Image 1 (cartoon, rainbow, N blue to C red):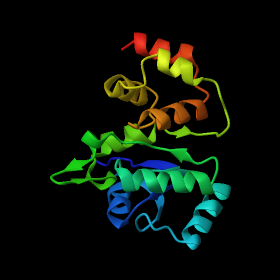
Image 2: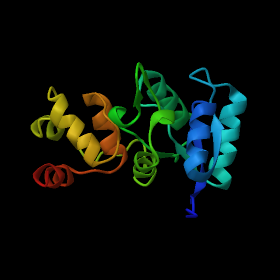
Image 3: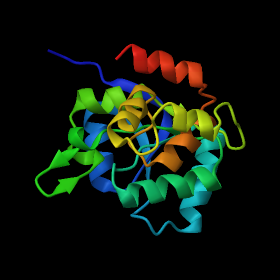
Image 4: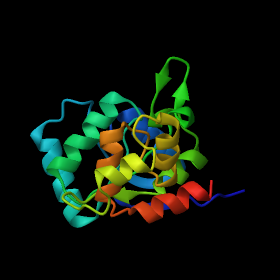
Length: 178
């Protein structure tokens, strides 16, 4: 049986060659590899050009170095899409990374990309506290999953929800439907 590979228009930014190999084994796509968390200026320049020409999806590993890379690229190249894969979907013994995920989980992550815009305040900190999202990691992680922004601490969750123009009412609706 001949399976047609899904084509991804945007260029996907990943950490390394193994991520590229995994993605290209399941999808028709192009990637830019950062080579880890010490990103050189020429790589940032390539990402900026890719964003201008085709758009970019940042798809880093669900770990601290992956978050560091994601933040750095989002700061340097505004308007990038972000794909998040849950840690439990990208695990191998003693390792975590995009390269360890299966096709279905990768597609799920890529089909729920989010874009962050800074300096947007649709949610204030008191609303965030009132919703119980400070000090309740389990609840916060379920909200993060519902909005496809990856698990994160309270400050990052607040920032990402605001950057996506999410309101208190939208969060309440998501929380009530779970």
